[in-house]
Amino acid sequence: MSSLLAEHPSVAQAHVRAFNDGSGPILVAYAVTEPGNVPELRAYLAERLPAAMRPAAITPLESLPLSTSGKLDQQALPIPVLRVPEESSSPDSPATTLELVAQAWHAVLKADQVDPDENFFDIDGHSMLLVQVQRRLADSLQRRVPVVELFTHPTVRKMATYLDSSGT
Image: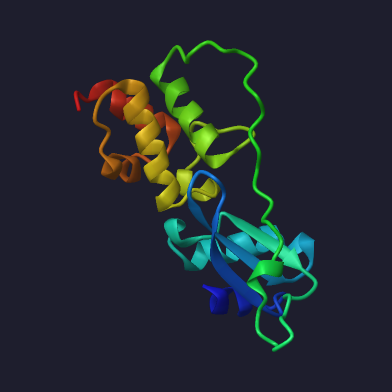
């Protein structure tokens, strides 16, 4: 993926690696580019990669940090900026399955808001995060939630409808 990102005309160099955000590993990208190019880079990768292979964050840099031997200095790469969820104003549990699914996505994606009709993979979701959503839903519902159904029903609304209609 680093080479694909580096092929974009606004990117001089790129590096992609796994980063542990505390809830599990995620893919992050570092690109030598202007900060304003990040949305364009996301769209570029969306056209060329399956959703599960796209980085959760793209961090623009002036240059990639190098060690004294001229190799990439992984330790000097900045911590990627991920979206941080707002604190819930209500301690009450969700009243509907739709709210329960949205809450799971919100927590795992660290999204400020979750649109019930937006595809999980279009809002920085990837397969490793999907497994975390699956675990949260299974724990919350106290029932089996097949991970394949999350791929089949990739929006909050579709997943909630599936969960309401299935006896899984």
